[in-house]
Image (tube, rainbow, N blue to C red):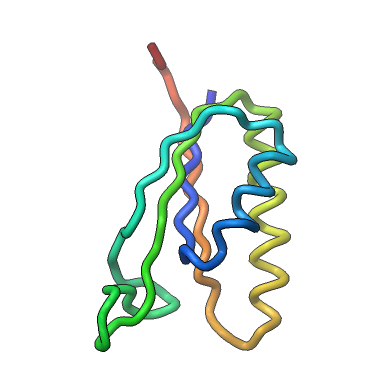
Length: 99
């Protein structure tokens, strides 16, 4: 099993949700209004750091994890061509127990 965390700008919600649907993911946890600082700058939901992020966490088998990762990479490739740092990140880790 794999744990996948997808960190993305809330304005990209529909694209990320499409990746999950296409990957046949039915269950997820979502954190709204996440702030922080990364390669794409500060997301503080204010004038200093405009914008806001979300995080989606899923626990899936290896096959589904591969589909999600491939979908996020394709999305990063498309948004990366827009001459701005990628604002979507994907963290994949091993899950030993899930109950």
